[in-house]
Length: 115
View 1 (cartoon, helix red, strand yellow):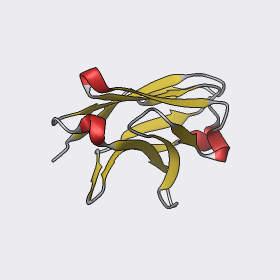
View 2 (cartoon, helix red, strand yellow; view 1 turned 90 degrees about the vertical axis):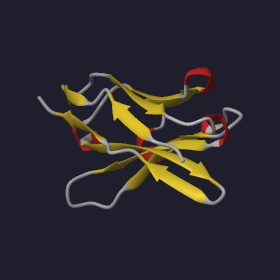
View 3 (cartoon, helix red, strand yellow; view 1 turned 30 degrees about the vertical axis):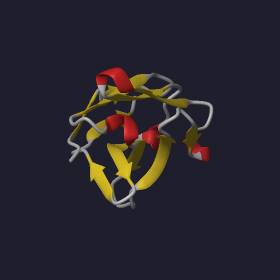
View 4 (cartoon, one colour; view 1 turned 180 degrees about the vertical axis):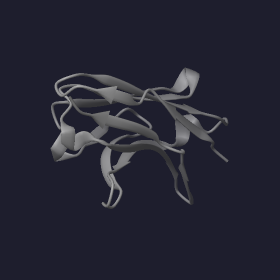
């Protein structure tokens, strides 16, 4: 079992930055592929970024060069550094943990990019 709690969302102006955090409980964090997803109003949840157990990363084309995913296995933490934010980045951002037979989600944190 993995419990995930996101934090760090808020209101930011276009061009600004935010850092999202995801705190994970349980002893299996280092065995999970971790990811960030987002869901804008009226749209389906979409992939943002993921990081593998050995630190390999992948990001969506829409955020490439602006968002960076990282993890701290010693402290069971996942991060998403978001730079040069755009209004279209406005969404609820969710932390995700994947195991071969299980998939876990956090409750989400709201990110609003607006002037």
